[in-house]
Image (cartoon, rainbow, N blue to C red; front, side, top):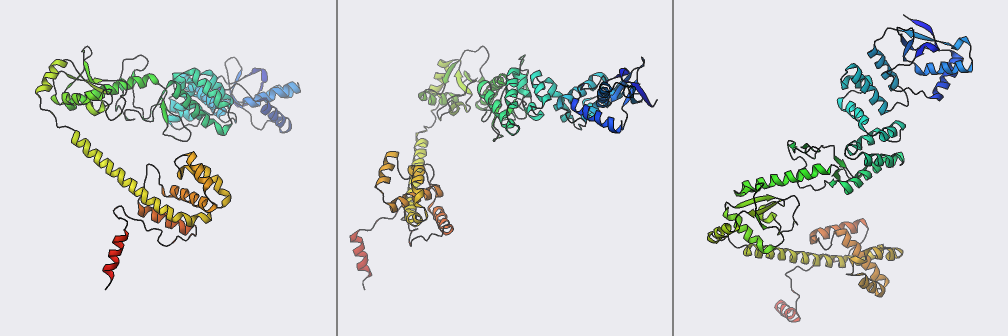
Length: 517
């Protein structure tokens, strides 16, 4: 065996070649090179029992020789040198894979098809087949083979180069749930410019989540629950996995990786049911009661809608009566402070009884719990004190701002005052109408002070929900004045305390008399 001249009519392509297509432009360029310089290296192949030769690699050279044969049908190009070697089917398949992977237009679909044939026909493991194509990890091989499970329309987009492999993998889980929606999303991505395709991917996933899935920004359960998959017996969703790491947990925002959603809404509903049942079991264990049975008839004691029944439900729970039941619910309660969570401890568990009459008798003889009125009054007192302290801080901060504003007003150009007014009028008036009146009546100097005061208010962080301390504001204003080369007036940081009282003329006179010798 060695190099032989073989008739072009007796040469066949490698049957394991993943790509039968040869770029005619590349073949024509090679044909021109062969015409001028000759064939620099003969392709390799094997002799078949019928005398024909199968190429292991070198299909572009074969296509070039056939072009030369058509252009100049003489005996010189009717034969092509072939290095004839004894090779097995597996060796032929591996050589075909190596040659294909070296092509410039080699795609992920070509690699996936080649690996699949090596695995199916020669029993190679996934990792062994991947190494033929230069893949060294099991994950990389699995990602490539997973592309073959995509719809045909998506595979065509990948093959043409319109859909990058990385973005196609992002649609794989959607294709398993809704292949039509996945194809539509892939086509929308392919129409975008290359640098806009990733953002389009997340936009398509977000659209599907909002229309057919469930957002996972604030799920009722931790993302790593359950620790082990829960069997459901459902033919469509056999097991409930944790959301963390689940392939159906997809990203929905290009700018925020934490904005995610579940596209497998059937799994989400089953998980919500399992979570409510788990919560009911926890509540029952905590309070020493039972979970409602599948055939038990119960009366709900408090469903979160009538606050008057809340105290009675709490008293009933304190009795630990045998008729009490924890009932899982699969729709979250209203979530206000008087919701079912204030009784059972969970938004997904209601308190019920199988025998309300017996429960009421037990409640009548049970000691009454201490009233919560005093606790509520103490809480309200603290809340009022905190609100009063915040108002006082805000009042003192406004005094500081009014003292400092005249010094900052000259550094604000007059040409910017109207523009800044439109953006800041809410900060020095309660309404647009009031702001318009104040602005029209104000002089040029007064307008500068208004703008300066509004800017300083934003700088120190004073708003309806936040009132920083006087010391913090003083330091901020002093630092800003140094940066802006502004000289603050003397005594600008003198602010009366909350307990200080204005002196009357009588008290001033009495103080002056005491100072006389």
